[in-house]
Length: 184
Image (cartoon, rainbow, N blue to C red):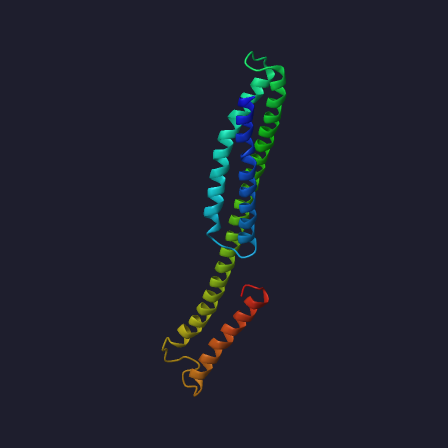
């Protein structure tokens, strides 16, 4: 009976620990989905490691109790087997909870990576848009800055203003296009 009470107390302490880890995962989920925080990945790996340590502690106990209940042991009476069955049921519940939490933390990591990738794609689209606008304006400036003798606008009085206006118009046209396709 003393062995049962000791082992049952140890196994029952796993459940509040798993509840705490589950609450931490819920707050991590809020950190990732509500307002993306890059520091959440450290907490994800910490929880994943804690679950792995717990799994390494619980799984051998489950196997020991499974063997203990399947064989007749001269050490323990028949009534004690009923108590050990209760501990075994708790161990199965703890092991299932650990596996469920491990699946959830894996999904949380996948969600973190997906959101991080989406944010990176958005940044790359914006940078590409800005580069395209600046590149087109530079093209116009490059053409008008070549100093040919027989350039059609060379003798034109408003050539400089016309070149500046064409750069602004090209830039605005490309900007409005990117705005329409929601890149900016």
